[in-house]
Amino acid sequence: MGTWLNVAFIQCADIARVERELSRLLVEAGRRLTTPRPRTPERSDRMQYGLGDEVQRWGLAGFHGAPGWTVLRTAPFELLMQGTPSLLARLSSRLGVPAFQYNIYDSTPEFLMEVDAAGRVELSGFVGQEVTRYWNSEPPMGRTWTRFHLIDPTAVAAWAESAMPEARVTEWISPSSDRPPRTEFDMFFESQRVDLLRWLGQFGQLGTRIVSGSQEWSVHPAHIVRRLAQAGSACLSAEECVEPAIKTVFGGPNAEHCDNLFLVETLVPHAPMPVEGFVLYAEAGNP
Image (cartoon, rainbow, N blue to C red; front, side):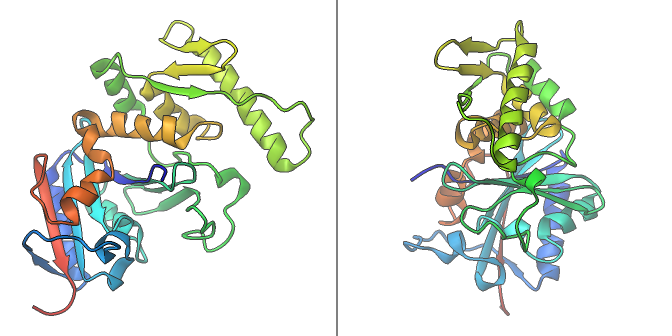
């Protein structure tokens, strides 16, 4: 079993305001806010794996991330991405701030939904075996890897470097093929690999470590977050590099709660919040 991650961040430090607007959106969606008792989840619990309205009870939580950001966790996992427009887009539009959700599926495929302050949506990446999901067709070649198109990580990356100077993510560079590129994909991938090498060469005195022979390197996670806005995640491991960078930089002091264990151990069984913030449960149907 590989790494799975489903986490959202909204650029608003006022958690109470996020909670109020989210509560209103849930009620407008025909849901009833409730305070359920602790429960023992089923083996394949619908609250964890279901989709949208087919799930009787939704769970949503919010807590502080990096300065200026609120972390959002939901059960089911992709609740904020569902609906037309998506719940995330409606929340961003109400608050007038950008937001995004980043997902990893079994360590490799990754998907990014970004929303700007007006509710405009940008997508990149793909959903595991369901390549057309959310796209409704094959994703364009330039959107196969995740990349920030709407989110500006400049300020939060600078904060992370200052607040956590010793933080690092470790990655490795895939070797160049002995054969010349044959397909458009081959040419694109090789160009991205060369660009990554060029990019790494900029960090000689910035804590970058490149091990000869193994092609292993490490940088501060803030550099990875910046690269997501400059060139995207091509040639970067979702599990080893992008996932820890996003959790560290945007999650800040609560990065550990950005893991999916939060959903499994807190939201689905209705357990007490392990961190200061809010939790909402929204029931379908009449009282």
